Length: 219
Image (cartoon, one colour):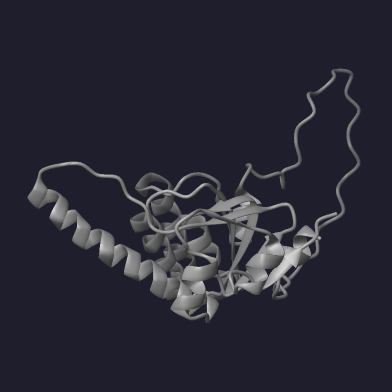
């Protein structure tokens, strides 16, 4: 099921080369240490080769920059070694909206299709990110939470007034993103997804509201 989930497009088969038949082993009285096969690779190698990225923490500059850089790097690879799609697996409580839009812009600029898969918890900025995928999936055990933009701050009056302007602009960006990704009106979005209280959603509700395309029943 996992390979079917992350491989929407068929992979190109690498040409195989004939290998010589190994010679018979020599007899030795000393016991040699068992060595792992040469083809055994370091953890994470197969993920990278297949274009699978993991977002499993909060959104901040430290966590998001490597993911955005990986998307850029995959797009700069020679076409013959590029993966046919990228897969972003998301399990995150959210975080900085500015970091989220950095990643989302990288996803939207990618010429390689990006599949997003939600697992565990998809909340706040993670909702913004999962809906930005070219193909958007959610496992049936995943908890999802959507809410209005929130940001705490303190300072002098003129400083707070400047911050309010950025708050309003960020909130508008967020609503526009919901509209583009869900194909719903602002009235619909504010009623069902961005009303004053946190909105916890079932996978079925996520699909109804246009946040995802498919629900994956893992067992």
